[in-house]
Length: 164
Image 1 (cartoon, rainbow, N blue to C red):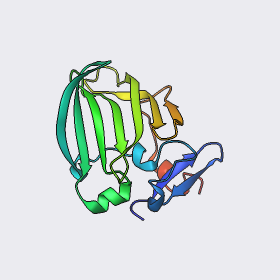
Image 2 (cartoon, rainbow, N blue to C red):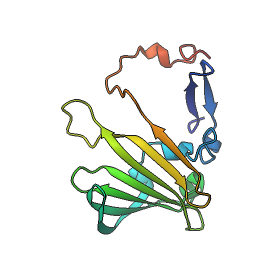
Image 3 (cartoon, one colour):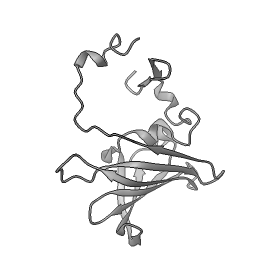
Image 4 (cartoon, helix red, strand yellow):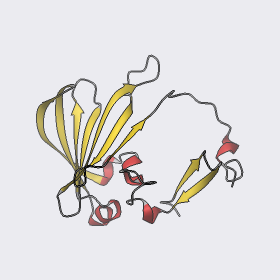
């Protein structure tokens, strides 16, 4: 199925399929869902600048992103996202997630960005914390030894290459 994800779990030594219908369910017991880990697809949202305000990293824009269709809204399980983006380098340092009723549900904060050597890019946050604003539970995700230029053989991403 097009919306399915494949995830390699080193501890099991094999890949697992995550059904697209499960993408808004807690991911392996964390505060993250597969939706939270996907790339942001700008065209799936109606975006609006809400404010310009100070944040710890300097002046930020606060941008509201509302799903462009009710179908996508139901699919991801959020009525909107609000992102704090640093004006100087376009790094997203906070995202608030609102449930389908419009109430604040989760907050993700990002810091410690890394980028490829010599790249003029906003970089990748290597420290992320997702907090459930209702329960107070949180999950911290840290990335170490990020390799922006890994060498892979195309066959490594085939079902047999993934050990299936």
